[in-house]
Each structure stands twice: as structure tokens, then as C-alpha cells.
Length: 429
Image (cartoon, rainbow, N blue to C red; front, side, top):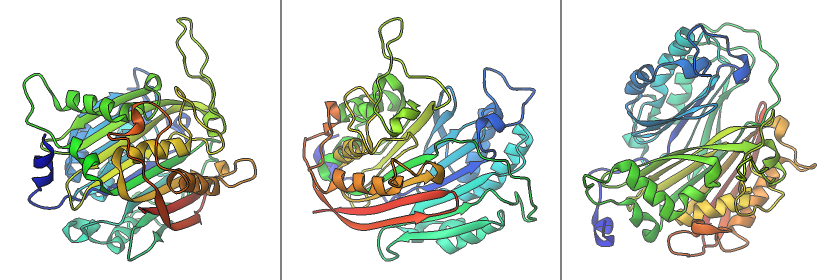
């Protein structure tokens, strides 16, 4: 699509890019899900639920499934409005626009109990950035108080938080602790199992006011017979460096280009526990190719990207649950460290304003004596304020090589029950 058309195009109404993010853990780990008679193909728990059942639930939320990528440990659903990730013991539902994310909760609890014999909730999280157009939301999403009241009808141990400037960019969180809870209007206590030792880590980079040059590639001409939304998005992902944010050899990417504008992608990524502290070398396989280490401290993670490019409400989000080092510098072909990841992502989208959050389980919040959230805050600052934003290698240098420097406008660390948060806001100098 021409630059002139991209600049002239405006939707009939503004689109709400910032997503609503719901995450439900039914057990502490996949190993804790009950066995099922219908389990097959190595799938257990919630991954045995038929796609059609999930699609019926998503009809309530007001979004559709575009495609699905099946991994070793989770399934990634690309949606008409963001993403849905299904693990044996956990669901992550991320939806944008005026979707009714929370109205899917009763049906999710019903499906988990009926289809996977998961009748209790171990942990629940709901979060979102402050809306650009709150007056356009419907249902319980009209304001934060209504969302909290709605969730309190399900959980008797929930707590709600506002992090950041109430009259500026801020982040909202509702979470439960693994004590007692309800899956309906009548709370009841439950036995709490001891939690497996594992890393629970989520980094979000939420970007607004994208530059005109960064927005332009996300406007598309009419598709021809030999070009599909998926093939167009795959080509764009390669051109912009999205496909090389993580090593392609470890990444399974699924992307979609919306007409006339917009972009979404999910990626499943192989990772090793060592990436928390070291950028380790993957050993060579029998064919000479690098292969990831397997073992109790390796696994499959995800990242997801969603882009709303229209002028006036441009927005891009990046979310990832692969643990990233703050103490080592990454090299080409390896999992990026946190600073390198931030630079790669920000250099693609060139935002005017950025909100970053790192949400990490407390038992993993120590890195050589320094809390992980404070190490993350240092990484945020170095990546964005102390040197021009430019990625370390490859096509991830962005679409025009422009290097930007930001100033930090907010820094907050928060300790919750079992989790810690690093929150920071930046704006272009």
C-alpha cells in the first residue's frame, strides 16, 4: 500500500489496541493435571479439548480463530482480536478492541471441569493497560471497578491493583493467591498443593504513537489470488525482522495480515533454563545443526505481537514468557538478553511512548543477590535511555535504521503474593 494511502486511511471509528489479558492456572504445572481417558497424541489436560469447543467459547468473547499452531507443550490460537494459548494446566486469553474477554470466564470454567476434570482454579490473573477509548467498551469492561466487581463474584481471594499514573499511562492487575477460591458465586475452600519449582516470567512491551515510517508497512493492498493473509504476513515478518527477534531455528511463527491494515503473530519458542543467567551454546546434533538442551529446566514458551497502525491511535504490543538474561550480552544465533530484545522490538515499531512490565514469580526473583525486577529496571533504562535504540544484529535493525533515545517517566517495583512486578514508562526525547 502506498505511503499516501496509509496516511489518508482512517477507520470509521477508532480501534482499541491495548489488550485485556486473562490467565488461568488450574494446577501448578502440567504434571499435576488429572489423567484423561481421551488423551491422545501426547496431549493432556486442556489441550485435549476440541477446537470447536474453544471456538464456541470465543463466540461469547466476540472473536474468531484464524489459525492454530500446535507445539510440544502448548497450542497457540491466532485470533481475529489477538491470541489464545492453551497448555495442559493453563489458559491465556488476550483480546483487543471491544471484545468481552471476561464474559468468557464462566464458559472456560465449565469447559475445564467438564472436558479436562479440572474443577478448581490454582491461580487467576487479569491485567490490561489503561484504555485509549474507555467510553467505547461494553459489558464489565466499561471501567476497572466493574471488572473487579465481576471477578469478585468468582473469586473470594482476589486483589486489584493500579500501577502507574492514574491520569496517564498505567497498568491494572487483578490476581488471586493459591489459597481458597470459588469457581462460581458460592466460595468454597480447597486443598492447595505445593507449587513446582519453575520459572513464571512474562515481559510486555506496550507501544503507542508509532512513527509514520514504522506504521506504513502494516497497511496492505488488496490481496491477489496467489497471496494470502498468512503469506503476506510471513513476508512482512521477515522484512521487518520480526521473524528474527528470536533465533529462527528455535521459533515456530504464525502471522496474519489484516485488510486493509493491522498485523498479528504468535510464535512458539524452545528455551532453556540457562537463558536466565547465561546465553548458552546449543550442542550440535548428529546433522551438525544446533539443537536445544532438553531436561527439567527447558521448555516451550511463546511470544505474541499485535499491531494497530492507524494514525491517532497507533499501537503495538509484544508479550513473551521466555526467561531472558539481564546479566549477559546475547550473541547472534542465541536467545536474546532482555536489553537486546527491547531494542529489537522498539526499533521495529519506533513508538513515541512505551510501557514495560516484567511479571515474575518471587522464587525466581533473585539474580546473584540482586532482585530480578531491579535488574530488569536497569535493563529497561540502558536499552532505552543510555544508548540509541538499535538491535544487535540482522534484519531486526528495523525498517529504516533510525535510532531513538527515550527518557523514563515512571519506575515502580511491586511485590505481590508470590509474584513481583517491574513497571516502567518511557517517552521519546
